[in-house]
Image (tube, rainbow, N blue to C red; front, top):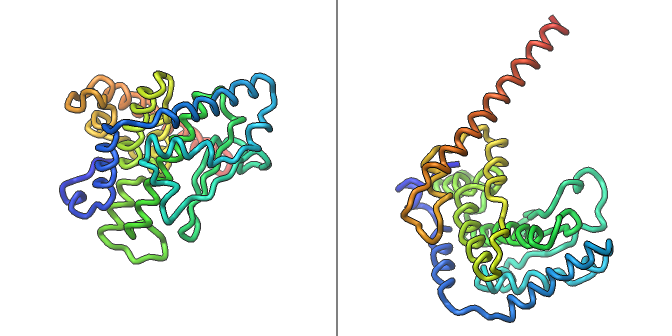
Length: 268
């Protein structure tokens, strides 16, 4: 988890697309897309209360996602030559799907987006998950199109390495944080709901758990900036998160020491 350096920016092929997308946010939006999304969300809450969510997952998932695509991603997710497949996770069983709210899978250059409304407390939380996963899809579509989506079978080049660094080990690195912050802020404005959130802090934790690298204060200050005041740093929030990660790191080290001591006692 790190910010791009000047050298990274020379090789990066993703950020210019994000900046172009953000510029489009100033254009008028189609209220029909907002109305369509609200109708879907109302259905989630109604059927959640009645315990009949099977009626929701019988819908065409694309009908849920297309309005969001137009509102937040310029309509480019489903007009891309690498159009994602979409699936409900309702009928899945087994460990692999027990805790999944949503996921994006890339195999052989094909992208599949999966969602599970039953795992969510309400429609607002589900909307956040849909947008979270669509951020992943959008970034990976760009990466495949630009020829920088990393693969263990591809030779290592500077462009691949920069993409891998900024996408992050779990896909929740700088690219995700930059786009998710803008999408989250736009969603709160369009739907007049401050409760919409894309799980950006949980995403940081996921990256930390994978890499064991505590983000720097500069990283937190950058991703926690308010879109309304992009030049205003957030040092207090950044310090708060660093303290939380320091505590997490201390607990992890303590646990490892205890396990090592227990193993020494058992195995000598």
